[in-house]
Length: 218
Image (cartoon, rainbow, N blue to C red; front, side, top):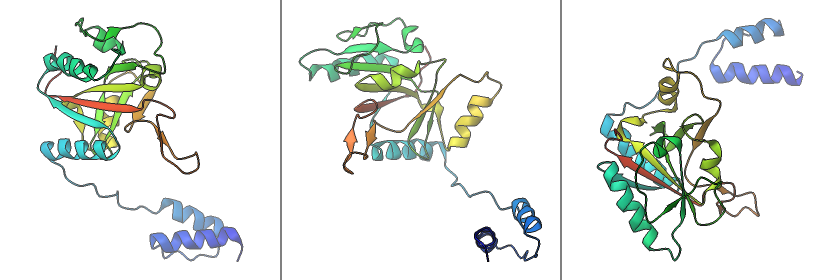
């Protein structure tokens, strides 16, 4: 039995197919056409969806804070900046810039973020409870802003938290023009490529804050 036949036999056994025909091409075609049930997904209520997102995001290293409205964002930023000797510079996504709010004591910059003392304030398009992942669209937030800052602060409308990744893609494809880039972010940047030791901030922000706001309606 050659290697291809062995592979097909393992596939046949894995999916429970009874096709044992001698024609290897016919067997391959039959296996390709064998239908299987879609993977079962748990039924999550809106409350369960939010709590699941928070749990998964925290498990991935993100810091999650729940706020009532946009007016609480600036005091939260101010409180966070108090612990620092030097107030960080703040880069804003286009959606946040359009709010025309005062973000003092943080100094807003239009320059490219620097490796240190730089924060980014952006809004997520969707947040996925299944994995604690956020989806960001390039037309709403430049990709560089997500990866060049030292600390990423993400505003999440509670209504934008969905159950699964499929739900997020459905929202994106619902009659909208596709963006050039879709970024999926799961917590702060990390890698274990260096001597199998976890390194935080290797390819992006060292810290990720998710601010879940009851409503981001301006």
